[in-house]
Length: 123
Image (cartoon, rainbow, N blue to C red):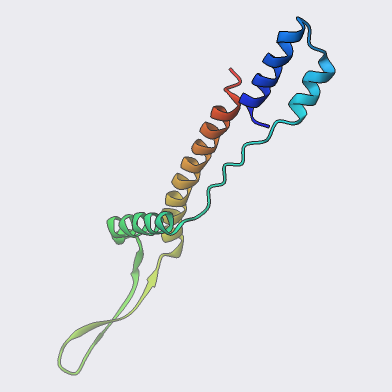
């Protein structure tokens, strides 16, 4: 039963009597449905997350490679080639986690809004 249905039911009872028993109200409240707002990971959302992660990593690319670990070789035709460089995994993960946290916050905000729409705010 939704909030609107409960209000309609209580209004209907009000037409017959000025008093409503507490047992009736408790039984009606027990029949209220919890909001079932389910927010899953859609392809559109996955693409948006991937794009934001890519953009973040592009903007912070200087932090992602440990420049002190870079090793170079001089090839036979006097070309300098990068032979080894370590990736700063912890720095990458900090950026990825920050992006995901932003999306988690947005989802939590949407869930709070949905709850408040169904049950009203507690304030």
